[in-house]
Length: 323
Ligand SMILES: Cc1cc2nc3c(=O)[nH]c(=O)nc-3n(C[C@H](O)[C@H](O)[C@H](O)COP(=O)(O)O)c2cc1C
Image 1 (cartoon, rainbow, N blue to C red):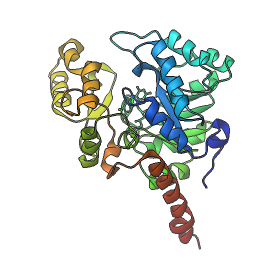
Image 2 (cartoon, helix red, strand yellow):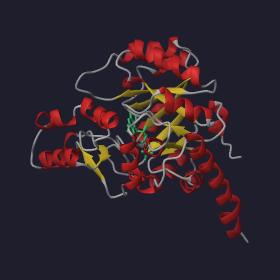
Image 3 (cartoon, rainbow, N blue to C red):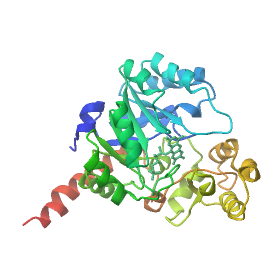
């Protein structure tokens, strides 16, 4: 059994988090993660309205009686969502764990804390992690350059970012970006983290609510097949490389502006990828960890495998080095 202070603080069995994932972080996956003893997050903004989020939380509760959280992503979007209303639903539903991500959680943290909610803030820089800690966040999820979604603009991989975070931050730290197996969990713990966060790896599981073609595509893909888009716009996003991402990179590299790629990157096209299984229909997030994915296990099997492998590595291979 591997237990860290993160497990104690958040009331979970294993130090593994499934971070928010647009169009993927739905009740089926989150409940499976919770039932496996890890911490899943329903992605608030995947739900079209705050009312729909309330129903999704209730649906998740029907599938698990273990703790789970909700991700509230604070990022610039073409159509800004009513974040305050989503937050009110989270509080009103009695959720006790929230993953905030993106911009500073300053507007939301006091309301979440007042409701007795534990906040895991996800960010990509030490500066932002320290800021969130000073605001009263309970734990930090630090996303290295390897990650899917938003790696930030500083391009610091986990091997550097995690130990620096561990040196400077006193609250529990979750290492995020590029984790997919027991070796990664051991490495994160060795670097000073209290657990790992995974996105890409959880996409390729039985309970992940996306088309089988996309899951198989992740199994077949290597670490070489991602693109960083929106670098020129200061909103870098790591996505799975396909015809659309290549076109976006080429237009922006050629001096194009957001308006020139808007139709290509629209979220509804990304959603269709997961619905119909055509991986070239739009932009969809995936991280370098896709190079470590070789199968599509049930979530429970995956979590158990990661923890068991980590324990074996620590008590076997690593212990064997100490003489
Ligand atoms: C398909 C997908 C969608 C994501 N959407 C979000 C999101 O809406 N909000 C968020 O905070 N993080 C989002 N992320 C990032 C994950 O929560 C997590 O931080 C990241 O995937 C970790 O890196 P990894 O993919 O290498 O495990 C997304 C990741 C993936 C793979």
